[in-house]
Structure formats: C-alpha cells, structure tokens
Amino acid sequence: MPRPLGRAPSSAGLDVLMWAGAERQRARIEEAGLPPAAGELLAAASGAGAELEGITGALLLTEEDDFNALAAMTLRESVEGPVHRLAPGSGSQGVVAPYTGGEPLFRAGLTGPELARRYEAGARICTRRAAEPIPAGHDVLFLVRADGRLAPVTHTRAPDVRPGDTAVLLGPPSRSPSL
Image (cartoon, rainbow, N blue to C red; front, side):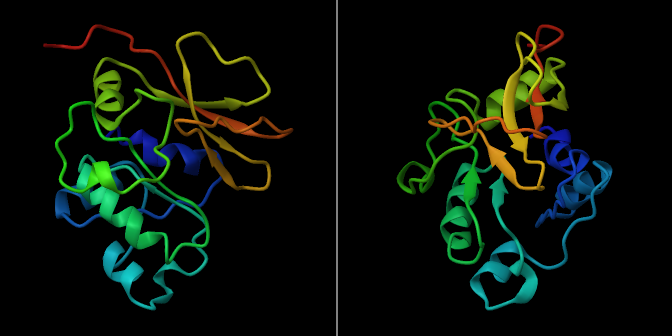
C-alpha cells in the first residue's frame, strides 16, 4: 500500500491513528510522518478498551485481504462510524475476505494491488479543493468535509461535494510500471 495514502487524510486536516502489528509496518508508518498507535488494533476492538473511544471511522488498508475482512467484522462493533476496507484483488483466493460483505473502498477496480501498481508507476496522492474540476486521469479517494469528517468513495457511492470540502486524489501513473 502506498505510504502517502495514510498521510493524505492527515494533510487534509483529519486526525489519523494508525495501528501496525509487525515492526517493519510500524517503521513504515513512522517514515510516513505519522505516529503509530500503541497496542494492537484487534485487542483494542475486542476488549472494552478506551483505545477506540472517539474513533468515528476505520479504513483497513493492509495488503492482507483476510486481515482486512476479519478486522472489519471485529471493528464494526467498536467504532462509532463506518468501517471500510480495500476490495480484494481480482482473483484473490482469500479464505475469509470473499464472504464478509461490507462496502469496499474506492471505485470498482481500484483494489490494493492496483493502488500499489499505480503508485509504483509514479501515481501520487494529492489534495485539492473538491469544488474544483478533477484533473483527467485522477481518481477521487475521499472527501474531507469542512467539519473534519471523512467521506470515502466506495464501489457504489461517491459522496456529494459540499462547500469547503477537500478532495484526496490518486493521480495517474507518470511512467510505465517495471516488469
């Protein structure tokens, strides 16, 4: 997953809290300029812990489709707002992911592997005022509302633009991906 995806909502004015289990994942979060949250996400979600108090939505953006699916099911009971996850890549043979339901993030076809491929090919994540025209070749990933709420694009719904919204976009690749 492109590291700037986690940083983009923060740069648009949202408070972002990121969990990671493996030390290399925690290092990647820190490299992106975000402090990793203390503790473990699923432990916080399954307990009565205050770790999730005040969290108004969750985005599950790992490269592991089954983890995203299981975490989404667990978090739905603990988070005050929506829980979204990346759609599994085409041909994914996950054990759990195909059966958990839920609305996947981003337009159809913009899966985790596709995001990573486009990022590797030079696509970058940027922000702009949502009222401005979206440049050709860019995909809207989220809107950050003027009041600080996050409105993600999903497979079936693109949020309506409101005054003061900021759009988080994925730009087009700038070069052919290396084979």
